[in-house]
Length: 196
Image 1: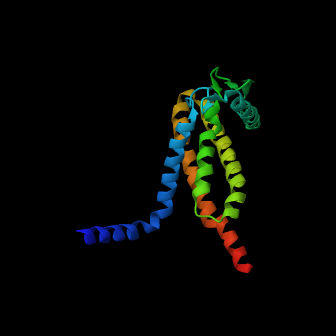
Image 2: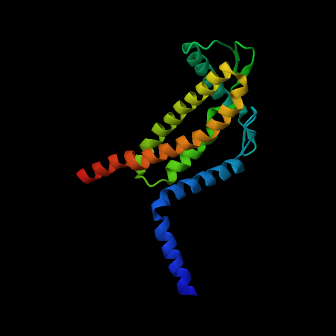
């Protein structure tokens, strides 16, 4: 019985070996999700956010305000007319979008930090890749907000579809950042290690 169990574990381990990285990614995302909920309090659809019971809403509002300002400029550049009132964007059809902390990709940035921390990369590669990955996530988040706003401008009833679609797509983008880091970026450091 003990031998069969050991043999089963070895076979299972061998079969799952090609998926080791993907399983690690899923476990790290699960870990970061649980840790987020242990450390932070706040409904993703509201302005309030607290870290270990300490209200950090005002700090996060600064980032949300910056994001609303940049998004309003991007929309204006794309010829989508909006009036901006603080963090609220009023569209020509009379309906508005409000930029809150959940729009900032703060939770996804938190998850991305742990994904890179636990991924199979050299320490120097992780250290230098982290800012690149975070900037990439911020840029993707602006793309996400633009697409949501674009379709909201055409038909406000599509908001929930695009919002939910990108809620999942942004984690897919975190996965792409992870693949690029492990498969491409870390290889740059492998080549430099071989030269020395």
